[in-house]
Length: 195
Image (cartoon, rainbow, N blue to C red; front, side):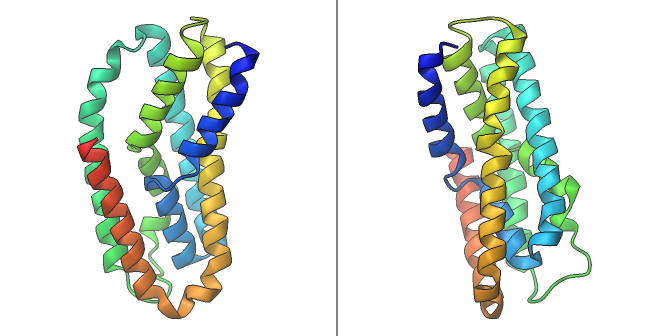
């Protein structure tokens, strides 16, 4: 990738990565519900899931170019279904902290990222726009993938920390916040399925 395109790449990372999406809303919802300490463990799942997903996309882009894009349709519906499940779990959550925080686990964070079609399509777009026209080396794909950590886990962490900061203000409105987060997740699922 030419160095002159770095500013465009960073701008896209800021715009796409930090706007509301399934993983960002999920990180916010978990930190509002469970607090920073418990949600950070889930964030490590988001980090691992994103790293696995972006690595898989880099290998696929390297091996197949962008020809595998037609298979994203199937993952899109799987991701939308999982986001709807998360929306339901958030909607049904009770006030107060649950001892069983299965929805705020390392595995749940990984699954959110591995089925996050917004980020998978974003990764594919970045690779096909900023790397493949200029280079077909796997190392170049992974250098750009390292920048994408700012868009995925970096943005998720910002949303998580914002939620943990705002938690003290919303603690008396847990049910309303859960409903709003559930609706936001449901809207993300509809958007993923329709786009």
